[in-house]
Image (tube, rainbow, N blue to C red; front, side, top):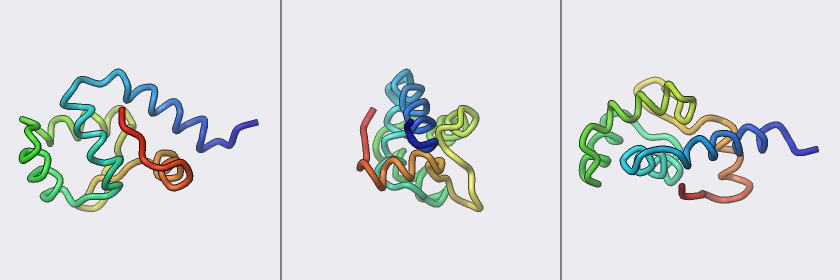
Length: 91
């Protein structure tokens, strides 16, 4: 039987594959960076052409694809474990 983190990571990745173009850009940014301060994330995502990064980040938090920390945002634990064991994946 697969480990719990793998089952949950697979479920989250499947959900991520159904995101819009800008939502995927934000998700992939966090797959590359794992944990980023709020100000830096917004600034870098705007530079990458995402029009309203904070709105998208909060939507991804609501969907469980990101977690809100103290002045930062992170990949949820199952995706952090997946990334560590299998490497980053783009959706």
